[in-house]
Length: 237
Image (cartoon, rainbow, N blue to C red; front, side, top):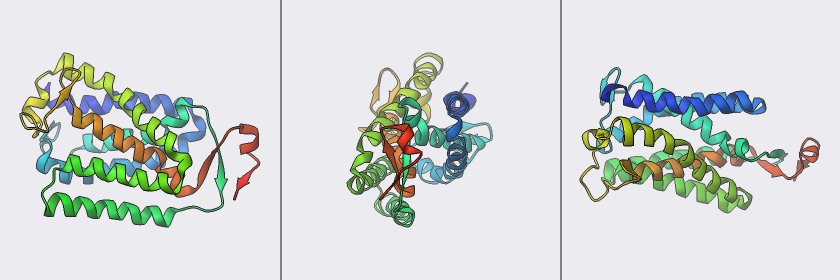
């Protein structure tokens, strides 16, 4: 069971990904593009998380880069960038000014922060990544206050998506998983809630959802418009 638990996480998360993809035809292009980017990022992220967060068994071995990492990054990114638009029927108009270059700089700053605070200063990778996601989300919201609601709700919706998955796997099927493979277990940071669900996991999903949920709109300059009929006609200044 331990060997396939990480795989089961990714496959169960693939179900809401598929539901959104089938239900929201207009979001498919964006969803596929961001999902593949997230899949590649999933490989890179484990470089940090394997050091001080967890050592998960995978189909390809323990604590090794595996295709589960790609599937996880693929699904969680696709869900996070579309979950708000799926839950709340929204129309978006194109703003003339985009911030793709600024977002690129922000992203690089986030990577630099992971290197500095995790590798050089020794802060735990999960704390650094959650903090980086929230700081980047805050910067975007400061520049685009209209994205505040989207950021908060995207984070909360991500938790709503993963809670049933984690409850099934870790409160019913594999209750000892985090004790065995979570490097924070039995430490001050090893807090679990709702049974055997690590609080750090929920914090990560919320922070990631808040960041990724608004990143595409921030970079592209899309703004929400209340009336769909107007959204097809108007380009905002």
